Image (cartoon, rainbow, N blue to C red; front, side, top):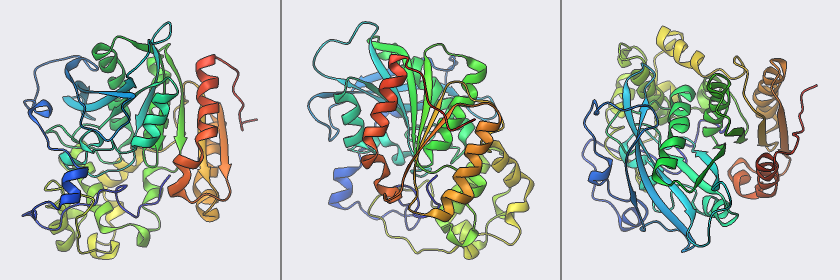
Length: 387
């Protein structure tokens, strides 16, 4: 799992409550929030995964061979409330789908903030345009959810694997309603912090048992949410305030002031104001942001417990693609997670790259990704680290 810093894969937060005018480079990279994303809160009743609306969209920086359709659909919050998520579906723009439809890769993105503009479907490159386009060029459809609250006018459950996994699972029937040429067969791929979401999808599918679900791929070293914030000095003030925001989303009775200092609260109040790659903000250390004993707060403890990996058996195989560039993190985080997954009977394959920096992992591990994907859709046997 990606370390806590730097925040939010290319999308730091705003500096003050009054955002400065966007720079030209921001205008080029970030798209405006249109009426397409607006829904009442609470929304009109709908079943989880029910499509609300869709629209073709041609303003992304994607190859002409890739078609994009935005989707808006019903999901569920951690408290069971009807919420709305947005996302984008990418398909080949030429040629006919194979018998049964385009096989589907559902993409779970890493941390991108909590503000509405942080949604990947509002980024010109859809967050990971080259990689997603490569998947499409190989004959797959890509369904990429934003997660509730990114794009739509609801609160985001930052780094909550269960909430984000629910959005991922519900994006599948919604995408198929918008584009019937999609296959019923799908896998989930989680990048960086999205790896936690991918495993949570696998665990939820053990109860759902969708016959079309074929497995989960994690492209990062993996750890629980608590371990992402340990040791504390490596966590940025932005990550800690975003964590507090997520806790407040899942547990509305949580008092943010019990966790954050005055400086932390000032930063917290800015989180929904802006999300931009070009924003400059005063950096706060962890010690400046949170109060002593913050991690002993009952709501913080419960929030971390929700995302512990390896307590519910997964449905389908799991592939973990990680980097050994930081040996300490691999030994102290990923290895125990793999052991926990194996202990409960999961089928786990762990592909380790010794010479890749974590930031290069998603691009440089493509051959391993494709090999595993092809095997899943072909129904070939899986290999496993577990004995």
